[in-house]
Length: 173
Length: 184
Image 1 (cartoon, rainbow over the protein chains, first blue to last red):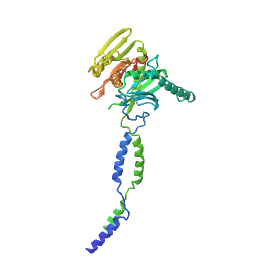
Image 2 (image 1 turned 135 degrees about the vertical axis):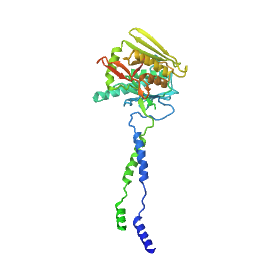
Image 3 (image 1 turned 120 degrees about the horizontal axis):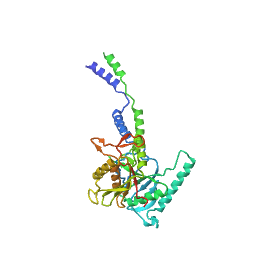
Image 4 (image 1 turned 90 degrees about the vertical axis):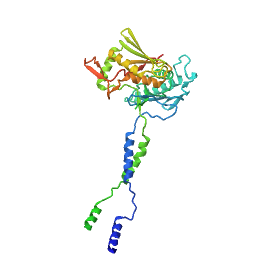
């Protein structure tokens, strides 16, 4: 009996190291599963949408990936070009002072900004042959906005040289 | 026997997972920042390469001959007008619920019938009314852009390629949708 207790003591001495070890295998398992899920959801899309109450994109079955173009946001609160607020709106209604008196479809401030952007792109294109001004603009518009407003925006874009307006949408399941 | 057991115990080893864990922990915050739960796409035409030239050739041929125009009224009814070499044909798709919801199934059936008559026309001019909201315009565009799935496969429509004279099968109905009333 005494001999076997001595044997057990030696066995315990041999098996239990003096330093403490954390069992991390299950944690690594969990992280690997998480990693796979995150890699599946990874996106390098040029379109970044910040969720807000005044901008919900319409759903569509279109599967075309968005292109890297000039971005225009038409929300209930205003019109933005490349994250810069150009027109202030209230509940999707544009103030009459922002619209041209002679041409009610023409939004002057938007035209000025888009024209500036077009000039900038053309100037860069004149120096860099790999770049060309193609007149493309990606419009992220609030789904409930009436066509009346979008028509004004598209008309103004067209006059500024951005005649290829693309609509950003959420992919329908 | 005890010596053998001791040797076997010595042969086992613990894999050091700490460096792997370090890497994973570094990658996870980066991936978390770039994660997307909603996929953003763009409304444009997904034309397959083989069909693209045939569609372009057909569009060029029919540009001045056949025009398909579609108007979405405030009561959600859809009027389709076809200008075929001077003759005009008109079709009306009543709203599923007047002023509330367009009849997308009825519209699709009507568009399929038009497509059978004009298989090589791919351009459509859309003229929505001022009060129609964007999401309804997008729904109408979706209904006329491509064919629907039937028994797990997309319905195919065929047309003759004007350049080669061979029949081409496609699931495209009217992929080139332009807003006709933007200019006024």
